[in-house]
Length: 546
Image (cartoon, rainbow, N blue to C red; front, top):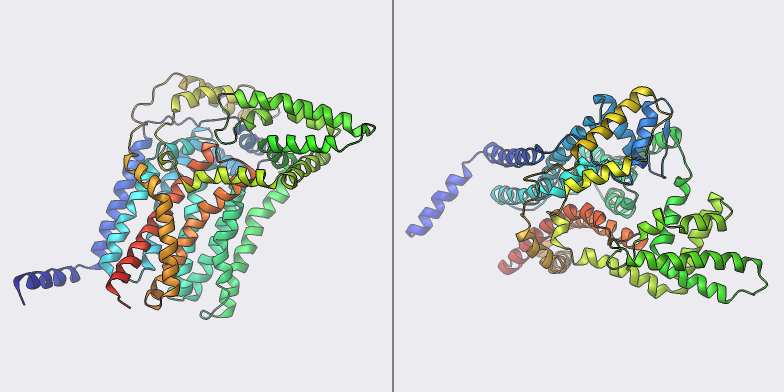
């Protein structure tokens, strides 16, 4: 044995004597360091939540609940986030509580993120030092996520995105644990609890963000697939999805059905969105419909009047500075500020059900009239996911000062006159605090840390393609079979942002940067898992080891 081999053997024996608790302690110290840096990043921010045009739809139900008026739905929003806002306000007595609670949940999502990564790493068939090294690599997306000014902005905003990452990474952690205890080392109780929790949390994400529908379905699928196969017992395998469904029904669906007082927006928000997002295609379809109608048809004049409004408003939406890049116009103008929606109501006799039916039928007819156009719109929007921008992962362009100015403007017209006096006073104090933030500087919140992420964004399509090849190789080539479980788990991590992007591309538009920022952190996390997996497959293949 030469000198180099002796040194290598000595090092190997030395490493083998390091206790597992020491490695775990190092991982925890790294996690604590990242969490401390995240807290320090947030410390300059005032404890005054940021508002926008959508805020009242979430805030008013919470204020109504606190006033004893019930959970009054506003603008068609779901019940879960308003209920959380009511909890935040009730436990603290002021809007400061919203900022504090959401900051806490945002930083806590980092713990769940680390737990998710460690659970996934534990499914890799590697020795403990490899597990330790790869676990430390997981600190990179964790650091980016928690230090991202966009994450801070979401946590400071009265929007469901403020708490979404907490629920998503909670679901991811449960799902990775389910993979481990259902297939790698089957254990009845952990697999049942984690599988049920994964379904429950996926439905909670859907309640927070309806755009999470496809992601909810596809990330819950492994728990339903776990019913098949062997060990643990069939009863345990069936209980996991059954308990998840039951608890989702009792805790998340039933309270909304029982306590939420619906408004007209609950029936008209989605149809209005479909109409305004696809306004150009619907205009073409309606013109074709008009051309086929008889001049004696009394409906033709009414429809022509509506189309005239539509064709007058679209050019205005196209010329606005806020026009969406790939869509070519600003759908929010058509939805909120134009005369289009009132015109549709006039056409449908100010009847919500007729309004809903008309908008949906217009979208359906447009899809049949120009299926290539509908497909092209969706494909163009999906390119934002296929070729992500580094700003999706780390958005250094957040303007907090401007956001506080627009916050005051957004709520200036909202007066909770029917609410209880103490609730109105709490709201007035919040408006006063918002006004006090106008013109304030926020030094240190906009930092350029995205240089390396520009390369990641450019490489993303290639990393995804490489993963497809290496994952397929693991399914086909027997010597790689012990990597298959980790590969499937990585598929689940990637499928969540993918499914979210698909649905938004179909129904809305990824031109809206908020949607891209929402899935950006999840995508970066999944890309790292996919890259680690691909690297292991390639290394194993080069060594030709079984």
